[in-house]
Amino acid sequence: MFKSVMAVRDFSRDLLKPYFTTLGAKPKLQMQFYKTYESVLVGFILAFYFFAQMSWIGPAFFVLAQAAIAVFIAKVVPMPPPYTEGAVWVVPEKQRAKAE
Image (cartoon, rainbow, N blue to C red; front, side, top):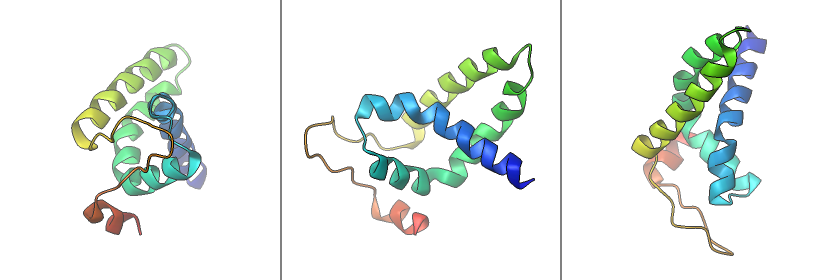
Protein backbone atom coordinates (compact mmCIF):
# COMPACT_ATOMS: atom_id res chain seq x y z
CA MET A 1 0.00 0.00 0.00
CA PHE A 2 2.75 2.44 0.97
CA LYS A 3 4.64 1.58 -2.20
CA SER A 4 1.58 2.46 -4.30
CA VAL A 5 1.13 5.80 -2.56
CA MET A 6 4.77 6.70 -3.16
CA ALA A 7 4.49 5.61 -6.79
CA VAL A 8 1.47 7.87 -7.34
CA ARG A 9 3.38 10.80 -5.82
CA ASP A 10 6.35 10.14 -8.13
CA PHE A 11 4.02 9.87 -11.10
CA SER A 12 2.47 13.24 -10.30
CA ARG A 13 5.94 14.79 -10.02
CA ASP A 14 6.86 13.35 -13.41
CA LEU A 15 3.78 14.94 -14.90
CA LEU A 16 4.66 18.31 -13.36
CA LYS A 17 8.24 18.42 -14.71
CA PRO A 18 7.31 20.23 -17.97
CA TYR A 19 5.37 22.84 -15.98
CA PHE A 20 8.29 23.54 -13.65
CA THR A 21 10.77 23.57 -16.53
CA THR A 22 8.70 26.19 -18.34
CA LEU A 23 8.49 28.35 -15.23
CA GLY A 24 12.17 27.95 -14.42
CA ALA A 25 11.25 27.07 -10.83
CA LYS A 26 14.04 26.00 -8.50
CA PRO A 27 13.74 22.74 -6.49
CA LYS A 28 12.82 24.59 -3.29
CA LEU A 29 9.95 26.35 -5.04
CA GLN A 30 8.85 23.08 -6.62
CA MET A 31 8.63 21.45 -3.19
CA GLN A 32 6.67 24.42 -1.84
CA PHE A 33 4.23 24.13 -4.74
CA TYR A 34 3.90 20.39 -4.30
CA LYS A 35 3.30 20.66 -0.55
CA THR A 36 0.61 23.26 -1.15
CA TYR A 37 -1.32 21.22 -3.73
CA GLU A 38 -0.23 17.68 -2.80
CA SER A 39 -3.57 16.22 -1.76
CA VAL A 40 -5.40 17.67 -4.76
CA LEU A 41 -2.71 16.56 -7.21
CA VAL A 42 -2.44 13.02 -5.87
CA GLY A 43 -6.21 12.62 -5.88
CA PHE A 44 -6.44 13.94 -9.43
CA ILE A 45 -3.60 11.75 -10.73
CA LEU A 46 -4.73 8.58 -8.95
CA ALA A 47 -7.18 7.63 -11.72
CA PHE A 48 -4.53 8.03 -14.42
CA TYR A 49 -1.84 6.17 -12.52
CA PHE A 50 -3.48 2.76 -12.58
CA PHE A 51 -4.28 2.94 -16.29
CA ALA A 52 -0.76 4.17 -17.08
CA GLN A 53 0.63 0.96 -15.54
CA MET A 54 -1.07 -1.21 -18.18
CA SER A 55 1.40 -2.24 -20.85
CA TRP A 56 -0.77 -1.74 -23.95
CA ILE A 57 -2.55 1.48 -23.10
CA GLY A 58 -0.12 2.93 -20.57
CA PRO A 59 1.68 5.37 -22.90
CA ALA A 60 -1.62 6.75 -24.17
CA PHE A 61 -2.81 7.36 -20.61
CA PHE A 62 0.49 9.01 -19.72
CA VAL A 63 -0.02 11.51 -22.54
CA LEU A 64 -3.65 11.96 -21.52
CA ALA A 65 -2.57 12.57 -17.93
CA GLN A 66 -0.06 15.22 -19.05
CA ALA A 67 -2.79 17.03 -20.97
CA ALA A 68 -5.20 16.73 -18.05
CA ILE A 69 -2.69 18.04 -15.50
CA ALA A 70 -2.05 21.05 -17.76
CA VAL A 71 -5.76 21.88 -17.86
CA PHE A 72 -6.04 21.23 -14.12
CA ILE A 73 -3.18 23.61 -13.31
CA ALA A 74 -4.59 26.26 -15.64
CA LYS A 75 -7.96 26.13 -13.88
CA VAL A 76 -6.97 25.63 -10.22
CA VAL A 77 -3.53 27.12 -9.65
CA PRO A 78 -3.00 30.90 -9.71
CA MET A 79 -0.49 31.72 -12.44
CA PRO A 80 2.82 33.08 -11.16
CA PRO A 81 4.40 36.05 -12.90
CA PRO A 82 6.79 35.28 -15.79
CA TYR A 83 10.17 34.09 -14.59
CA THR A 84 12.90 36.67 -14.21
CA GLU A 85 16.24 36.33 -12.46
CA GLY A 86 15.70 36.52 -8.71
CA ALA A 87 11.91 36.21 -8.94
CA VAL A 88 10.02 34.93 -5.91
CA TRP A 89 7.12 32.53 -6.27
CA VAL A 90 4.40 33.76 -3.93
CA VAL A 91 1.87 31.25 -2.60
CA PRO A 92 -1.37 32.80 -1.28
CA GLU A 93 -1.63 32.83 2.53
CA LYS A 94 -4.71 30.60 2.59
CA GLN A 95 -2.92 27.87 0.64
CA ARG A 96 0.35 28.31 2.53
CA ALA A 97 -1.50 27.58 5.77
CA LYS A 98 -2.72 24.27 4.30
CA ALA A 99 0.82 23.25 3.39
CA GLU A 100 2.21 23.86 6.86
